[in-house]
Image 1 (cartoon, rainbow, N blue to C red):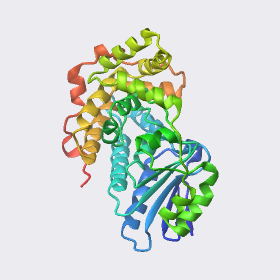
Image 2: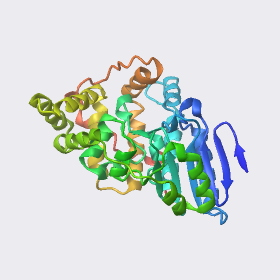
Image 3: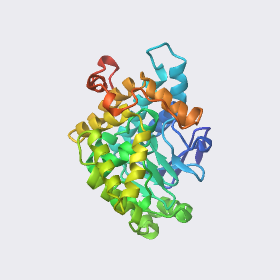
Image 4: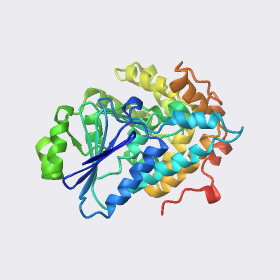
Length: 357
């Protein structure tokens, strides 16, 4: 029987606990209350012998989850005192990362169905689960550099381990689909949208492996993915964002067939917050040597500093509030990002630091 409220539909179907994010009007974005409800259910089911696995889906036809509700953080920060960013920012990120860590360390299979948009926090709530099932409509991205933040929710861990393509995804926010995700190992299976209802019914009746054997289908790597991979290998090998820009500019000027696609990637980088780009390069360098838990702790520190800077509020304003798509970044160039300011994002927060264990 389902227990439904305004934010989350909770249902036990056979021996599967089903959580359906229920904010379709907001592309199932994660509010603080919704995150807390998910944590409560996961903790209850972790010791419930009647539950063998957890399934997470999103309501509606457009999104699994478009990420954290950054507009609420924006509004909270704009109404707080100068130099502060509001209590919501600390609480929301703390609970979000706690939820992500809970999924990553869950004692039972955690299955997510990525149908439609999967961005930011939508990746975080699911990517460390045991089964990540993409559909033919999946559109996954980590677009945070476009709003003055950085790819978080453990991206320092899972993107850094993908090599140059992970760095490309984290800095540019480019969107990828099911075949790309299967190729990278970010998705474990592909079940078409048309089979969604029947697959879920089979999952609840027949179990995980039998249902996937019946409904999972193969995917073919696209030509766009091959080009993206080649650009990543040729241009995203450097340790500094300036090296990436230089490599892309060289490829663009070469006028070889790949140059037109390199121009598109370069254009995306030029639209991003310069500070966010420098931060992303540094977090990926550090994250490649850290555990998943340590990456979350590091990213929490980074988030609390970012939310005291103007770039976040300017980015959200331009992309989500006024929607003029013309943010005024400060500083306006990666060459003007001060090393000391970057280092401040990684400092210990004392008693306010994130505690996961």
